[in-house]
Image: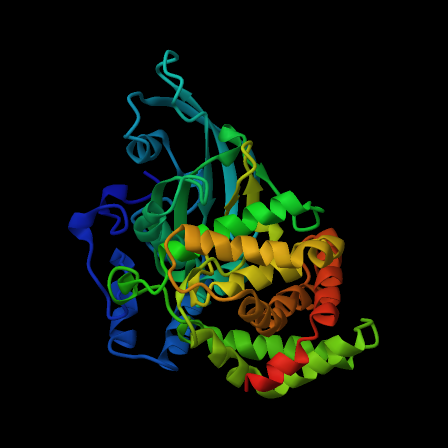
Length: 422
């Protein structure tokens, strides 16, 4: 047997579920770190991030898990338990493609013992522990795998079917060991996008509608004090202090380099953010709070045949004003000419979606634009780091997203809002 019984997984089986000191679902390996982090908060979360990172660099087999660590470890018994809601049994599952990155991804083609049922999934998508120790370290330090597993276990059911794939099993353990069994959105006509794709205004409007529905579902939710306590504010996120330092280094390197032709407005913004980043990020905790996806670039989205849009990769979700997700998408992913021509319309679509889904005090269009100007530097940061850290994105994605982000910073005239925000 390649792994311990998946029936022992705390994420899968309520009978084995316990709570750790931070309100997270515990896995059987949490006893290794619980004595270190019990009762700690604030900067001590960075300590937990370091412990997780230390476990991440160990060979995969050295950290025990009650679930398969990789897609190669998945067998038919495990898949049949994960897909037990369906009135048939699997007789075969074979890989038909995959990629390696922040997580390892494999698409499985499924064969069932019945061919008279039309609603059986024909494929599933396995996301699992990164094979690269470098990627495991990042995933562990920032709690990315745990975030996504908990999203599917606790938050997914509050959202409509288009917003995220269906999840059949979600498991997470120490040192970035994890495994998700997800719907293959291609089976319902989903079309995953690439960050370098050029979308039209209709796709951008559909994304605004989706973000409005997502944010309205958790707008100032009391669940953030209960089962969604794991959805932290930005500055409480594991590894946030390390991430802030990393972005500061990225800005400094770009400002000092002759290799990158940064517009004057971008240089001014980067210098100001380097001197005021902690104070600027305090604004993430002001105003109505909701669950945000956190990484709403085009490559984490998919279009559906009815024209709606959904989101993939929920690893970096946290609690913040919803307009942060909106700004991130507008800056990184909307072609410059589309953003310039349809900006007001896109923002209004988002605000209307909030109201349609029950938010009573919706920001005005002017307030929304000021929020976009504030959060724009954070979206720019996420593009800039791909220039310095090769391999985070394909070269064509790096080029297109940085072109869009630089143009957005220039167009939006962000400095007056940034200066007022510190």
